[in-house]
Image: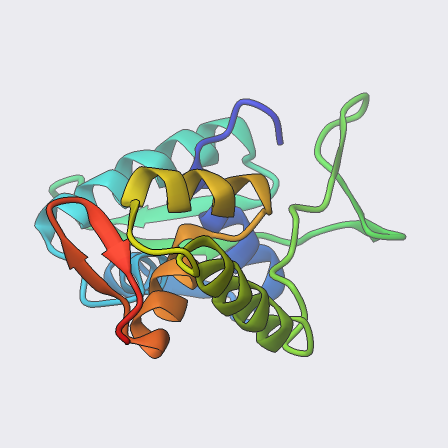
Length: 164
């Protein structure tokens, strides 16, 4: 898995985790970006998928229309042996990392809220300072932003503070 970008890892996770045998490129892009993907995002997913198909033909095949436009991503048969995919005769790659179980997600949200409260307890702080503290605590920026929103954090000119 080393040497793969974020989009390529997301594609492999989707292909490995799902029972589906094929995906429309547009639907795959929407899943990766968690919203309706525009043309630029679809092009990024298209390039990443083509690269993966060249690198892992045992996992991914592509279906194109007559003009060469990629339309479908096809999950090929996988040979599983105790959580390890066999990619080639000599090469073995561990399964991609999975999202935390749903039971851990509320804990992450609470950790993020606690960090925001702790950081802003003594007044306004620069956003960069709060983000750096979250990164050090292994809290994703998305969780940090959601926690700040839930707590009603105010922002102005790159500083955050809690309402009184």
